[in-house]
Length: 362
Image 1: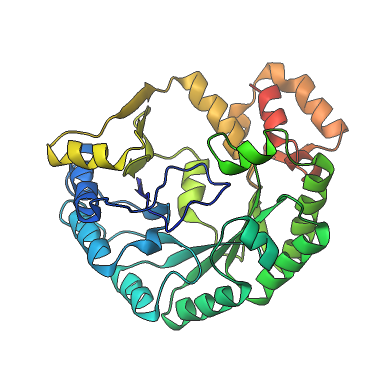
Image 2 (image 1 turned 120 degrees about the vertical axis):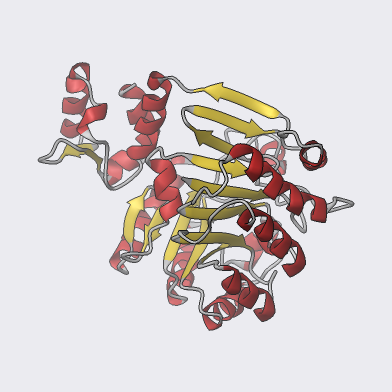
């Protein structure tokens, strides 16, 4: 079992982000921290031993040591955290100090993911980011000095006005810092974001997307990173265990306002309302939200899309006799190959149309 904790607080709202988040304002952060432990008690049996923990957001690094300690103690009082193999924590550069990082390490955090996005100052301003390229290097040094075993850098491409040369500069600047893991995300224009309102759903350019995707693949794999999922590259042994579990369809428990979880064939989504979330749990009730029973057909459809994204490919048990003509076409067009044990692996060209291939196999 895996654990996801959503921290919805941000210093400011980035114009491209569609995740549930808000500035702290008058939020009862102490109440929120306590509510996370209360939700764990209602969703999980006492003594449950998660294999991975992932703090996402929002900006988890905004939590003060006091609030983070309160949150973690609430989890420890109900769950057995002694078997956690990977404890990930999302941060933004220049939002933490050496003392904070030492505290994270003492709690057991062993993987930190920084939302860098770009090493171009003008693009950082466009994205509403508050850090500079120099801040990234300083933050990396803080993390390494504290002994954080694995560090990830998040990057984004196909930004408004971004050129291939700017993207290459960002990739090379990231490589110069020698992170253990690099995530590269193609910007999508989501509803309820300022970018969607400004640029529209049809923003972006397919040719540019392809150029930048291929550039990342070439540069990062040449530097020794395993391209183990469409958007993720890792040094050997530094793959994200939490994300791999999600891509393989393993159960995970999501805690926090806006969090999603899937356990025992049931998916739930907590409403994105921090005040309502906290109030419900203070009253001993599960937070408001939606639930959905996942039937086998729905699970197969989801796993098709997820497993095709990985370099392990789609196991033969997910393929049906009626897929034979599609498989022949995919191989003939150079979009996929079949391994000797029957796994369907997408080529680089196939990864560019992974969603379309998944739909063809549904």
